[in-house]
Image (tube, rainbow, N blue to C red):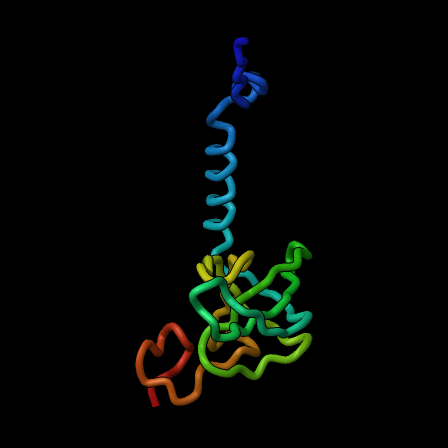
Length: 130
């Protein structure tokens, strides 16, 4: 008895292998063209991260102003003053321990204030020198 192994590449055949690489390159270009986007908060919630970590992370469901696309956005730092319908600025950036979250809110812009009492890494968390 002879077993016949058929690979997916042989079945598909007509689709070139570099197709996925071209799609990834196109997506990266789109991210580079709009590095920051303005969005409006729909809902604010906390979720738990993947296995080794345990602290709840603050995220927000937002709708991007120009494209009308809903995204999940991580809110960095300790504490925030966001409410429903507040405006934020977001940037692309993957959060490794949160599944499906590929955008991060920028602190200190629009309705998202900077972290109060922050001494180190002030530029990341939107704190001015007093």
